Amino acid sequence: MTALGGRPSATPPPEATGGAEAPREVDVVVLGGGVVGSSCAWQLARRGRSVAVCDGDPTRGAWAVAAGMLAPGSELRHGGEDVHALSLAAARGFEQYVAAVLEDSGASARTDLGHRRTGSLALAGDVDDRAVLDDVLELQRALGLSAERLGARACRRLEPHLDPGIAGGVLVEDDHQVDPRRLVAALRTAAGRRGAVAVRQDASVLVEDGRAVGVRLPGGREIRSGVVVLATGAWSGLVDGVPDDALPPVHPVKGQIMRLAMPAGDPLLTRVVRATVRGRPVYLVPREDGELVLGATTEDAGFDRTVTAGAVHDLLRDAAAVLPGTSECELVEVQARPRPGSPDDLPLVGATGVPGLLLATGHARNGVLLSGLTGQVVAGLVTGDGVPDVAALADPTRFRKDSP
Ligand SMILES: Cc1cc2nc3c(=O)[nH]c(=O)nc-3n(C[C@H](O)[C@H](O)[C@H](O)COP(=O)(O)OP(=O)(O)OC[C@H]3O[C@@H](n4cnc5c(N)ncnc54)[C@H](O)[C@@H]3O)c2cc1C
Image 1: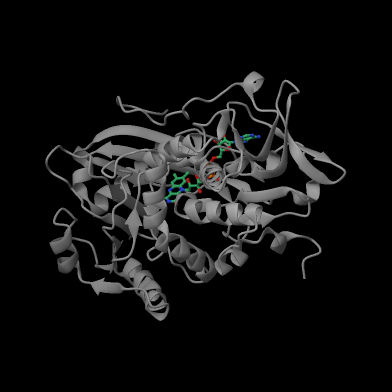
Image 2: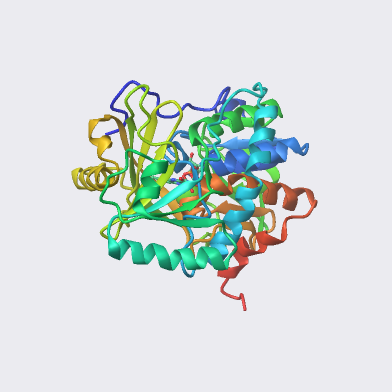
C-alpha cells in the first residue's frame, strides 16, 4: 500500500541517463542517490570534482518517506550522547546547508524546502511516561540544551487541540524540521547543475589490486574513478564487489509511517510533537501545506515493505490519544521503508581498509539531519580540505577487526 490520495510520493532525479550514456571515467562515483548520496554528490561537484551517481531506483530510499524532524534535542536518550553530539553539529549547520542547496539548485530565495524552526514538544501520555520525560529532561539540561518543563495546561496553551488528558511535556526550542522530498529534489537539481551525472542503474564496486577503481554496471560497462563512495543506505551490506572486511555492518530497520491531511484553514498542530503513550513512542510533524506526518514503527523485518493493519491501528490510536482531531483527517498515504541501522546507532562515514573506497552510510533515524554534514565530510576527505573534528565519531574503522 502506498499513496492513497492524489499526492506524488517521490520524484525521480532530473535528466538521469541509462548505462549506455554513462561516462567512462570520473573523479568520484557515488553509489546510491538517496539523501546522503545526493548530498555527497552535490558537495563534491561543488568543489570541482567530476561525479557520477548510480542508482537503479532513486525513489526506493528511506528519505522518500522520512518525516524530516531535525531534532537532536528531543531525540536525546541516555547512552546516546555521541549520536547527540553529531546530530547537534549537523543541526547547527543546517540553515547554511539549505541556503547553499537552494542557491545551487537555481531556486529563488523564496522557494521553500519546508525548513522551519518551530521547536518540538515532547509529551507524556500519563504519569509513568512523565517520569521518563523528566529523566531525559535532566540529561538535556546537563548538556546545556534549552529544554523547558511544561504542565498540561501550558502545553495546551501552545497547542490548543491537544488532548486535555496529557500529563505535561518538555518544550525544546532548538529543534527544527525540513521536507525531505523537497530537499532531495533540490539536492539532485543542484548536483546536476554542478555537472554531476545521474546514472539510472545499480552498480557493483570494482576492486583491482586491493584498490577501488570504479564501478561495474549490470551490462558490464565500467565507470572508472579514483574514489567510490558507498551511500546505499540499508542496502550497504549487500553491494557486490566490496571485499568482505570492508562491507559495513549496516542492517535494515523497517519503519511504517503515514501522511494525513489536516482540515483546510484549521491547523491542528503548529510544531512537531513527540509523545510517549503508555511507553510507546509516536510523533506528529505538521507542515504548512496542511500535511501531518505521523510515525513511525521500528521493526526488525529486513527489507519487508508491507504496510500492516496492526501498525496503522497502533499509530492512529496513539496519535489520537494525544491529538484527537487526527481521527477526522484524511488518510493520504501509508508506506514502509528500511532505515540503514548501524550497531551503535552512529553512521559510518569515512575511509575503509580498501584504498579509494569511502563509506557514507548507517545513518539510521537521522539521515536527513546528518546529510549535509556527511556530504561535507566526504567532500573534505576526497579533496584533502579537512573535516570537522566531530566526524571522528562516525569513523568506520571503529568496526575493523584489527581496531584497538
Ligand atoms: C519511517 C521513517 C522516518 C524517518 N524520519 C526521519 C526524520 O524525521 N529525520 C531524519 O533525519 N531521518 C529520518 N529517517 C531516516 C532517513 O530517512 C535515513 O537515515 C536516510 O534516508 C538515509 O539516507 P541514505 O541516502 O543513506 O539512504 P536511502 O535514503 O535509503 O537511499 C539509499 C539509495 O541507495 C540506492 N541503492 C541501493 N543499492 C544500490 C546499488 N547497489 N547501487 C546503486 N544504488 C543503490 C537505493 O535505490 C536508494 O535510492 C526516517 C526513516 C524512515 C524509514
